[in-house]
Each structure stands twice: as C-alpha cells, then as structure tokens.
Length: 284
Image 1 (tube, rainbow, N blue to C red):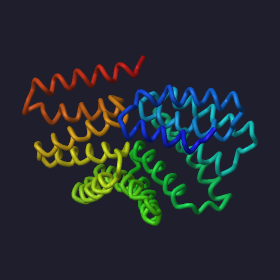
Image 2 (tube, one colour; image 1 turned 180 degrees about the horizontal axis):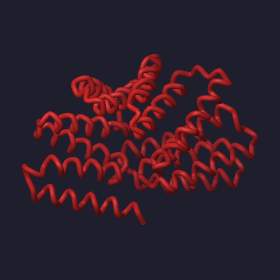
Image 3 (cartoon, one colour; image 1 turned 135 degrees about the vertical axis):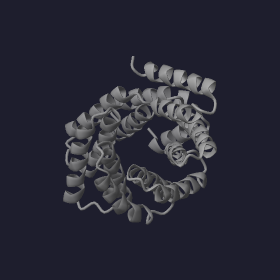
Image 4 (cartoon, rainbow, N blue to C red; image 1 turned 180 degrees about the vertical axis):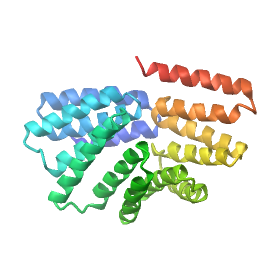
C-alpha cells in the first residue's frame, strides 16, 4: 500500500471540507492493510484514525484505536523504540481529550524517557511532546509548568523548515497559559502572530479556530464586545470547516452566546440551545 498517496488523499479531503469522506476512507484502507499484514501502513492509518476521532470529539473511539496501535507495536517488539514513543504520544493526546489527564501525563513521561534513552534530538518530535505536555498541565491548572514547556518548545519549532504552522500552534498554546495568568496583552500579541502564521498556510489548520477563539476571549475580558463577536464567529467557521460541529465547536458557541447575552438575548438563547444539542449528541 502506498502510504504517501493515502496521506495525500486524506489531506485533500480536509482541504476540500469533505470531512464525511475521512472515516470510511481510513476504515477501508485499514481493513486492506490489516488483511495484507502491512504493519507500517496499518500503524500509519491507526494513528490518522486516532487523530480524526479525537478531533471529532469521539474520544472513546480514539482511545480504543490508540490501544490497538500500541498493542500492535508491542506484538512486533517495538516497545521502547522511537516509533512506539511517537504512537504513545498520540495515544496520550487521546487520553487527555477523553478527560484522562493524569494517564496522559504518565504516557508523556514515558515518551520523554524513550526519547532520552534513544537520544532523540529531532526538534519536531521534542517540540510536539513539549506542546502536548503543556496542554495537559494547563488542564491541571499548573500554568507555570505549562509555560515552561512551551518556552522550551518555541525555539525548537522555529528551527524547522516550513514549520510555520507548528510555531503558530506553540504561540497559541503559550497564549492560553498567559490568559490564565492574566497576561492579556502578551497573550494577544502571541495570538495575532499565530493567526498571521496560520493564515499564511494553504489550508485551514485544525488549531486556527483555537487561536481565534482565544482572541475572542481576550476581547470579551477587555469589554470589546464587537471584536469578541467577530473572533468567535470566525473561530466557529474555522472549526466547522475542519471538523464539523464537534465539542469544541459547542464550547465556542457557548462563549459567543455569553458575549451576546446583553446585546441580542434571542440569538444568545438560540446559540445556547444549539450548543446543548451538539454536546448531547456526543454523550450517546
């Protein structure tokens, strides 16, 4: 199986907003790769499927796929290797999305140990680990540690040729910690740079919506309601274009509804109702 062609087709679905094509495409090729005992292709597809389910807020399925990928690597004797660590990193991110933050941090620590043992210096791999660890610590409320990991990640991603999107993701994550620490002006500068970098890309990055939503939060905190509305509406469009109406879309919708409470009460109520319906759809 030609994995490169598979990934190019997958990228095309996302670029063309054909999200409904992704799951059947991946499942079809997963069945073919499994039947052919094409282990490299199987692992690639499992990692892509894991990320897709996570992005669609289908976190239970993401965790199940993660376990399948790790089991395959262990069966093949790859435990403790760099490929195993890369898949474990993806699995940890699925755990975190599923609300299993402590389990995610344990997995991130294992990845760190494997990278150290194998003397991994690839800036992309190390920065990706730091970025993900920072988000986990943000969720635990440890913003000092989260910021520390992001400050370690930023100079690494800036060395990656063509890594503008990864720099933008790091700036976005760093801004979230600064917002929690009340450093709104600094966070806004980081986010404006992130948005500039995201918009320089040829297609929508899945983290673009997060940067816009964070700018909306800052504007709201600064009582700049019109800019808050604009940023949140742009964030919703970006999230829907890449993933459809997932849980993060619902959360952003709720944020917009709060901004609109004193401006357009009827629209605010309608948005809250829609957010509840979306959230309920992921609980079955």
